[in-house]
Image 1 (cartoon, one colour):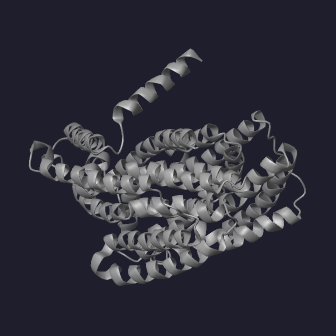
Image 2 (image 1 turned 135 degrees about the vertical axis):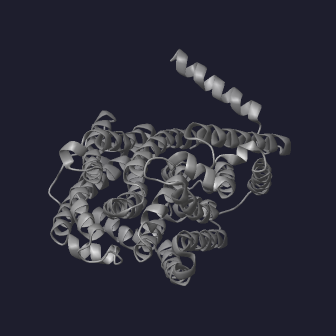
Image 3 (image 1 turned 120 degrees about the vertical axis):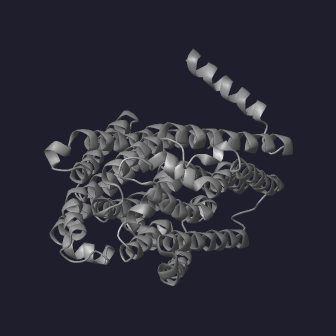
Length: 520
């Protein structure tokens, strides 16, 4: 599992870094005005469906069924099930895409009620959404094929394919504006084109892995009915974070213009550790945990769950602490150029701190949810998810007038904390989560090390490095890079001193792996 975790997190890191470059271009060329708000809404719509249906409910229900079939009945049966699933999924999504294109103005009324009918943001959002909506069809198909590859423990190709989204997005922003009319439309066409490329890459990879999928007549076989039943109840539970973000978006459209964009850029920075660590842990844990349970290896399942929590939080805790302390310099260094002003960076940093507060909880939800899904229980996360959805909505309404763009991120963070806490409590009560002494000692130590790192960064704020907001573009990057490097050094040294992790042993293992790769 650790090998798969590192593979997925490595490719996800590359994708997130390229995504950061894409977002820097959007920030510099569009700023935080009406065009940026409209584009973010247009992208949020299909991306939400992708995470809910493609990577959320479908993945949570499909991977355990596929992995169990592969383990018990062999590759041919698993391939047939995957082909049937793909055919049903694409047929339904094609219908949804056509309906979305026809009724897009009404859809925008639901997710962006703050966009005044007929104004620039509203008109542009409708136009851009009609361009990006077919991405839903392609990327959900790609998510299914990724589930097939993950179920076969081919994590690398599935994770690498998503790099193409940002590569194509960057190319579209740089090349297409003269043809598309403006940067916003060029970026929208890049989104849809990337979905086609990702789906094609993953289908090819699945074929090379001996799992060539083909379209068959859509039919509700007994296995497909089981899948749909699990998807239906797992929709909210597996996608609770995305639904909360949608609520945040709806509230943000009711706030002053630019709030959607301020929150988006803050979320993109927050998504770097969340996507790299949370997604990697959840992706690799589910099929491994399912196989242990299928083999009645309960001790192995408990061990795997504990190690997944450790792997995810050993980097999430310092990431959250660091973002809380140096959010403003980070936002200024990454986006403070072009039409994105220093004032925009300060406001967006306020949203980032609110997101970072809940970062460990967001990751824990992704790590704890497979504990239910691997046991075929998608009902419990739904019930927990419904409760946290209501809580998130209440908090959003409570915060929106006096916290503005800080309110939705803070509401999501608090809701995620409750979500993670309830999931952990239920797993503990059922005996599905059995923390061992090693996990408890590691969590206490990692938390202490993250606090020490944060205190060190606060002290750096009173040195010349603390002037990153006032420096030139190059020096801002140098200053933030130095702060991050020093923060990482403090954290790693604290881990070594407290005996939480042996850095020398880790570096030796990495060196051995690199030597083996060169030899191969």
